[in-house]
Image (tube, rainbow, N blue to C red; front, side, top):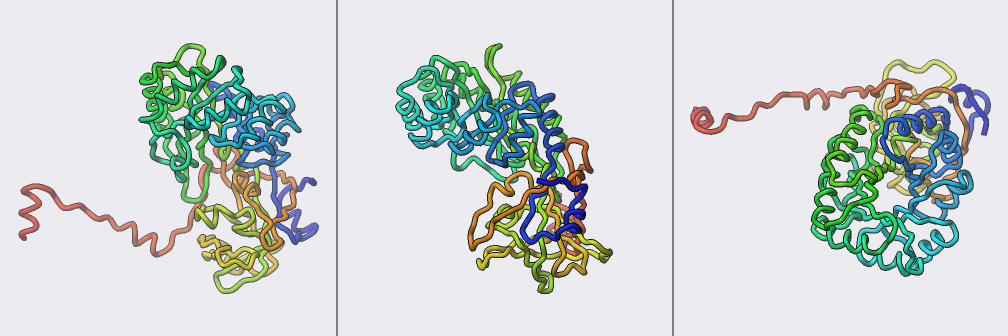
Length: 418
């Protein structure tokens, strides 16, 4: 991996044919130091957000020693770079073989679950071990996330007390609770609300939690998404923890993924063809642009050209390199109106759920890795502006019309008669 001052230097030197993940380890280190300094508990990196070697190396170098893993390959990845790391197997549903290997081969002692069947499986696969740290995933109800994670995992709150009691009896070590308020949470108070629900479940079960894990969901900045300060999220979590019915030794955990790595990488793509307002790129929904297709995620984009570009911006849509018609990203992505074949585009804020989502469909999916020294397009950590401007269209202006509600009661009836 070489180091370039900025993406344009890479384009000038060798005009890459394959997509390039542009990585910024120094920015990741800043984010890691921020979380460790401001979160009053243990910070576990959610490896799924970006399972790249450089990410684990950088986080370990920045002092982060705890990791949320969801598979044996993620366990092996972390241990290659951080042999003494504390691992928590936080996937609520695991195979027996994975549990056995994690416990006996890799020394993992912390496992998540959200039902009686998974609890029984963990106990059986570990030979009824009594040195387990068992974390019950709760299905809390919260608002404010761009992507809800409440549908697949989490014990329903009316069933939680029974599972909490059974889990408490199953181990001589630590028992805890966890939840996930949803990805890209835009409302800090969602954490406090979730912790209140968790506290009520513990009271009904008549048990104390040794661990309270507030999960992930901490946001980054994208066009049209300007989250509150991360300090507001920390304050909400800490207030919620102070209000919970827990004992003095209860540990507080969090599992940031997106907020740690989003700013630390971007994607350099080549325009292979232009058809009107459609740009055909060398990466797409089967590569690192999965979220741009399936969740219409509004990633920022800018032209990387060794020459003058038009000052007039125009909305474009993107198509990926595969032959599948769903390999399409509607955008709109605002770029100079003279963008053309052979140009390069930088897609920003791609450190989270970018390269991690890539497949090899149609023979594509290879991504190069290069280091750059410039900053992100936006930053929650003071490294760039706090927002990404979004051009307004005529439709946007039309939607700004103010509509007054009709008066209710007698006044409303009188006006309607007129």
